[in-house]
Amino acid sequence: MPYGDAQLQAASNIIDLTRNRNDEPSNFSSGRILYNAPVQLWDKKTRILTNFTTHFSFTLKNSKSPAETVNGDGLAFFLAPFGSIIHNFTGGGFGIFDSPDAGIINRIFAVEFDTYQNNIDPDSHHIGIDNYSLKSEKTVSCNGSLWNWMRENAQPWKASIGYDSSSKILSVVLTCADKSVSSENCVVNYVIDLRDSFPDHEKVSIGFSASTGASSELHQINSWDFSSSLEIDDNSINIGMVVGLVFGGAFMITIMGLILFFRQRRKNQESKADVVVLDVPTAPREFSYAEVAGATSNFDDKQKLGQGGFGGSQTTIRGAGTMGWPVEEGKAPSTLQQTTNVVGTMGYMAPEYVITGKASKETDIYSFGIVLLEIACGRKPVEFTADPREVSLVVWVWELYGRRKHLEAVDPSLGMDPEKQQILECLIIVGLWCAQEEHNLRPSIGQAINVLKFESPLPILPYKERVSPPLNMSTFSITSSQSLTESNKSHTQHSFKSSTTDSTKLNRSSSSSSAASFLHNTW
Image 1 (tube, rainbow, N blue to C red):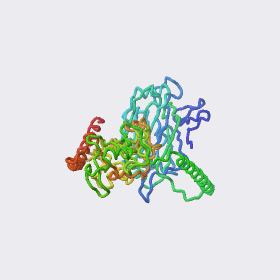
Image 2: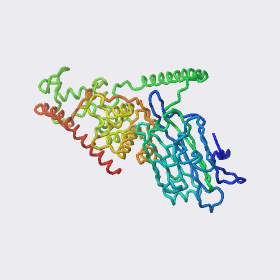
Image 3: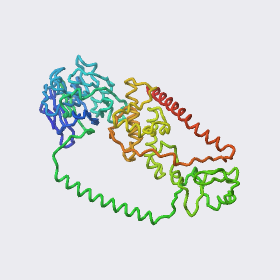
Image 4: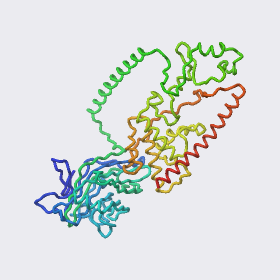
């Protein structure tokens, strides 16, 4: 919704925030646009604060003469109480501030992209965080030469603003839309609880505003998208929507039923073998019953290793490998059905890979996410000696994230100053983003790297993630590729149990060291 001098160019869908007409002067112009619906910033009953992310492209350029050397004021993305009246100071204050402190009355929060140096500004090419006032609470100066060149050549900028309600960090990233011009980023991070900025208003208006002051400058919004995590409650019932959902749901159930029916029928028509062996070099070899009987002298008691609750165990030919299993009439032991699908390191494997045995880009992204969590938390992805709720690293961190306490998972040896907190917060959230159970919700490696490099804002994740429970390792059989004699069998088993505990400690120490190294290299 446009106000003041703002107007939409119908042919190009570009919004001019300030005056862009040949028959009128372009100085002392101001205008703004507002999204036509309120945004739920927080909920007073639950104290839950929203996450939000917005991306937009804008252009700042000379309005009239190419020789114009004095910039206008710039533009701002702002939040204001929904339904409030924003006073417009003609041609100044980004069109939203009557005076440097007028925002205290209006309760306006803004991210400014300032192109004019007032006596309260560090320069004429900076990003500022304005909380009720034109006197920015934090500013970051950008490349002045690039800033002026972009303005003189009417080149578009690309900006991303993200707010994480858990860490209360507002992130702003500004870069050239055309990377061939420059790949340099201007980044601002600021910690603020927006509930304190709008204590009496759960809903806010969002939009853009700009002004020229006594100079001539054109401010254009080329594109804009906005998303938030806290939905607005709507008590009204849309009958058409209900009917559509009922019939749509019935149709989807019918389609899904048919798909399952035909898939099951096809499965029944395929091979009747109970065991599917993965065709990989590390897979065990299949032995027939006759081969095992011949190798054990028809299960002679003289070759018996021992007697257990489920019968005796015989040795095979001395020196033969044990990477295999007996099969009789196409049936394999129950442990085979548990182990044949596990080809990889436990804890790093994506759920769909455990089921299908098929690797993909998405399974690699899952493993990458686990590594990020391992770096931040300083522990292995699976620790069987840990508390039952903490055996699986990803399940434990998701549970903490659901309670907005995910920073409690950070390795204490890494410390927690504000700068480290920001990086560790980023590692954990990107790790969870990559380790989502639904493979189609995971990011590409490029998207993940952009966030880790703070070139994109943190993603908005659901606070409740359905994660498959860790596999019960007690049902897996452990075999060795070397022969095991009766004299050293019990000693080997005892050593295995002891080394499990030692390796747990060793790996946690190694993970902590890796995390410290990663953070050191990052800073």
